[in-house]
Length: 144
Ligand code: HEC
Image (cartoon, rainbow, N blue to C red; front, top):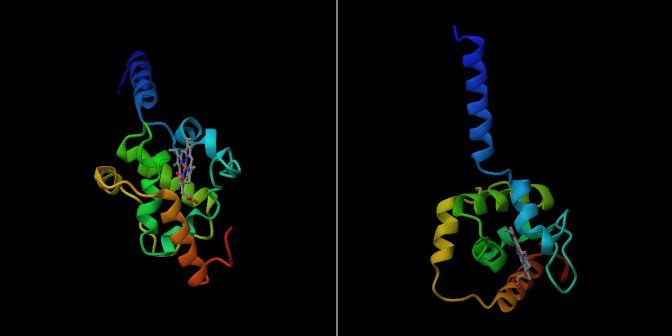
C-alpha cells in the first residue's frame, strides 16, 4: 500500500505528465487553424474555404493527398502525428456524415511523406479539378 504522501506525489506526477503531453485535437485546431477556418470550420469567404465538405475530397482520386498538401496543413507548426490527429478530427467533426465508410484515418507517416514532396501543387488548379471531378461523379451538384 502507498502511504498518503506517496499517493500525493504520484498524482502530481500524473498531472505534470498530462500537461506535458500533446494537446487535444480541438485545442490544436483552435491554435493553428481557427484563424482562417473559424470555430466551426465555416471558413472566411475569400480567405479560407469551409471544411464542412472537406470529406468529399476523399472520394475522388488525388483528393486524399490534396487535403494534407494544403499549406495550412503541410506547412503548419504541427508535427506529423498532431497534423494527422487534427485532420482526422476535422473530418469527423466538421464533415460528419460525408466521410466515406472505408476511410482510413491519416497517419503521421502519411503526413510525413506528403511533406517530403518536392513539386509544389498548384493549389487552385488542383482544387478546381478535384471539385469538377466531384461534380462529374455526382458527389456534388455544383461548386459549393
Ligand atoms: C492562413 C489561413 C489558413 C490557415 C491558418 C489554415 N488554412 Fe486550411 N486552407 C486555407 C486556404 C486558403 C485553403 C484553400 C487551398 C489553398 O488555396 O491553400 C485551405 C484549405 C484547407 C483544406 C482543404 C479544404 C478545401 O476545400 O480545399 C483543409 C483540409 C485545411 N485547409 C485544413 C487546415 C488545417 C487542419 C489547418 C490548421 C492546421 C489549416 N487548414 C490552417 C487557409 C488556411
